[in-house]
Length: 170
Image 1 (cartoon, rainbow, N blue to C red):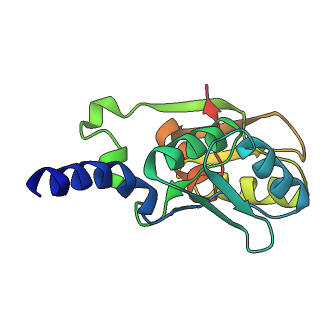
Image 2: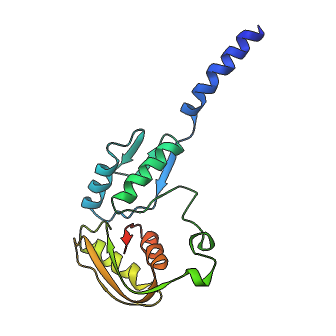
Image 3: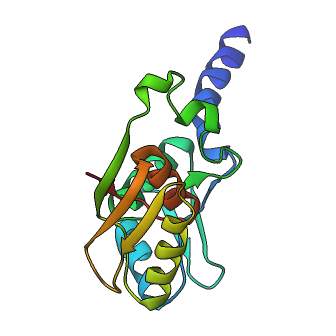
């Protein structure tokens, strides 16, 4: 009897992950049909992730699948997190040493999803919130844009992420 119970517990341990609650992915910017299509396309090849276009929700079967989906979204210019995790706190995302925080006078941003005028406006609005930014040349559908002023790259990335976008800052 003991062996039977142990064998059932052993088999049950493999089945438990299938019973785990789905993980909701939140945060990516999604203002229009082109954004929705881009998100759906980016996640099409990510296993065990579903996009409900009507509700605008993204769910994964587990955290591992969610991480893969988030990586795909971020590579595609969107910012996302697992529900409940949010972005890193300010203290975690910024260097603690003031000597490590280097301000730049200009930067080029690439890879941000920017399919329409609404995307462009939201990106511009996000960039304008960065302390020290004096100018940003964001055009609709542009693959890159320039930012000028005296600011940190970390603040620029954080502002884009807060608006649901992701990109590379050089």
